[in-house]
Image (spheres, rainbow, N blue to C red):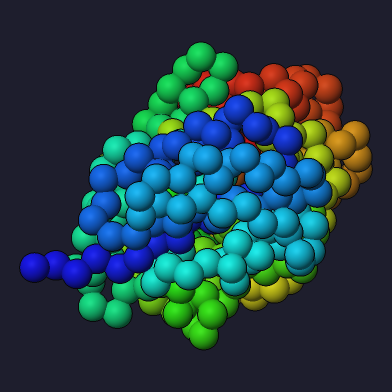
Length: 306
């Protein structure tokens, strides 16, 4: 008989009480044969102790306050360090796990010797549209992640061995400006340690909306992505991957109104990869041919981002 490990689901939250309750209920309702605790971490907001009322047998709901760096990274780490489970899973407060997620992911993780991390597909919900995003692969290497961010690898799908977080590749990095792209940096570090396991099934509803933490925070986005390029010199060996990130910086500079900066980063992008579309979108925004929010809305309806 299979022995299933205990799981702690860490849910950082800030000012989304109704969506948060839906997220917690979906975790508590998981058909999983071992203990699942939910650790809700309030970040820069007043904690709601009544969430403990959503607990069920073998499904305790705990409420804590972010005691580390303000923001998503610190909140996730606060929850991880408070967790008691053998596995740690992340879930954003505006997302929702679908039935069967946890059991399927743990089965996949246990099937690969040495595996530390498992993800799955997502259903992106935005402005009345739903799009499935699923990676057509069972394993993801560091080189593949440097080439492509693979936005299907969403934090709300992550299930990780607690030992890897505490004694292996480590916690979420809290130094990234504004916590932006902390999930991508975390993936890169995890893949350095061992290839990531992936399920080709969408088991999480991911909601994109105007209240997302990083909507319109272009200066922070630009600063964080430059930090990422400095931290990971391996990008230099993957021109297309490097151009993708510099193209994002170019778009962020254009969206923030810095036309000169946008042109400078777009030129750098085109030198690395003339086919990188973000460079040309950045130039279009900088030249006021199209608005940045129009580009984003169009991409989001297709389940994609910049």
